[in-house]
Image (cartoon, rainbow, N blue to C red; front, top):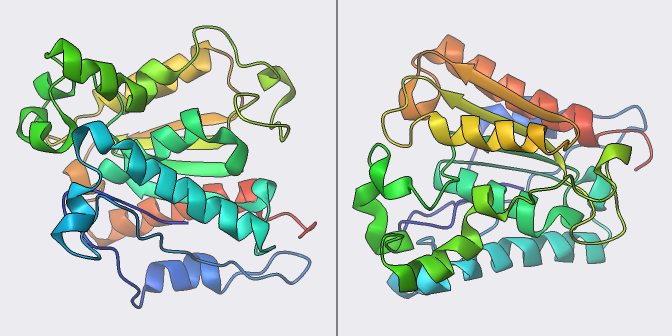
Length: 251
């Protein structure tokens, strides 16, 4: 699954050599191909300005509910199941992945969270964050922080190890374990900044969450890559992590 859900940006079907070669053309040992799902969720621009406004500020949770609803439908219809379902997102989509990991962990086997926004308490004082108040709200306003904190992945992490985390992936229900997680960023990212990804990965590791990986490139800025060579390495790293996490032979 791939999603964004913010800033009136649309994710539409189209040709992708990256997903074609890195996911769709691959088969596991049982002969099953990868499937790529683009989730059109509120907050984006796929259905016009009202679709975007429906998930602003205090209604931000609707974007995450929509993405989770698509995941549940894929599982309900037998397209996949939780251990074989992966998702990826970057920037605002990285915030989406952070919320999937902390609020809907029972739905995913693995997540790739790129150049992410994750600490919503301090986002307005980090890099370009102050310019996004119209999208997310102002955490310096106590009333607005009350709803912002409900979609701040860094604050949603439990202060104690997740029950069952020491045993690895758990499929019994929400709050009983986290998906495999790759958090990646770039030192030169001047839009979100690498500190958010660093803090999130460090806190998860400190809490004993299993199979959390962190990667930071020096170059690339918010794109995560500054040339085709770096871009190829970035996409290969993300998709290979997800494939190894979910593409076993049982499905």
